[in-house]
Length: 470
Image (cartoon, rainbow, N blue to C red; front, side, top):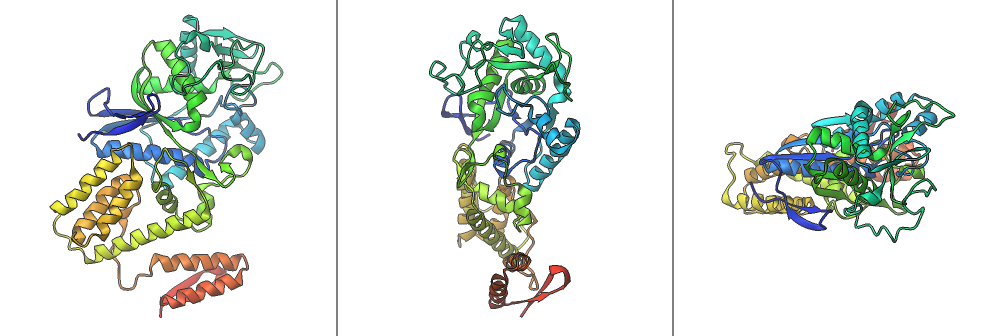
């Protein structure tokens, strides 16, 4: 196997990936809290994890990929205060918590399927593993890491000397209330809930009996308990967004290593935010963009995937429809180029020439350098433009690179003489949107542009249309 280097948040450096078991890789990825739809910023994290998984598979690893579904215990502050997000979602929609969880879990799975994100080997719901979470709290309790307050059982971070090593937290420098809402009962500002008690004056929809009282697990305990159940006490890779570094993943390490006495995870990988003009996209702000929003505006889910491919996972990416339009145009150009090449390519050999192998080597080196997929995409474009390569080489390279890119390039068929280019179809769809919005000036301009490109647009009932070559 070729050497693969990954940026490990724990060391703040690129490190060679050396698995615990030769030829195998265990990955745990923090999944969605299923109280609402995923927004396109959330989906960027799962996209980066998909690239990681594809790169591992491309390198020949047998990958066991585990993802949790948080359907209980994630409080609105992401710390230990406020209402459970699931209970809040149920109240918002007038449904049971169980109905909310099932609906938004399926919506999430549909989103990642549309983005060609490979599903995990194991989905694990927090509510299916309450026993394992209680057992881990018992373990920590028995070892003296916990204390009890009126509202729950807490982890005493002062008893774990390495607390904060992932985030390089300056514990003394943290101001009370800046990290978690300060309570007189909490001994230290970084302490966190392992088990929360149900309010005495109300019955929750999701609550369980425990040795400490009726209640529900804290958010962080589920990931430690379930990752250990499926991947073992010590495993290879743990992923998530950069927002998980200072609290969620820091707490996961503390409770897991305090319980087992072993190192929890070897490589921690974190993806950066997708940002808008106003800053990081957030559900708490009320309005957010879903993948369906983009589809309703005429974009393909793979247009968004192409947009994400252009930026390294550890860099912020700025979303705007102007930037998405540029990505869509680039993706369309790529598909058109491959159509042309497939039309001309002989379909005999499946062996790459020496010149093509150089591109394959460059691509492999790029993706193995901390998942540098943007450079990998550029290498594909260089190959497609290289007149020294024959068309069959270009087709074979595109199909192989697509094992990582995930753009369905292998499904593109050779261009037929009567095919209407996707560029024209896109312009026709934009005209349809303009007419629906009563922007008739733009609609007329788009009709003229389509005509200039050699096609006639025939309107039909219900806003539909037919495209014919002139």
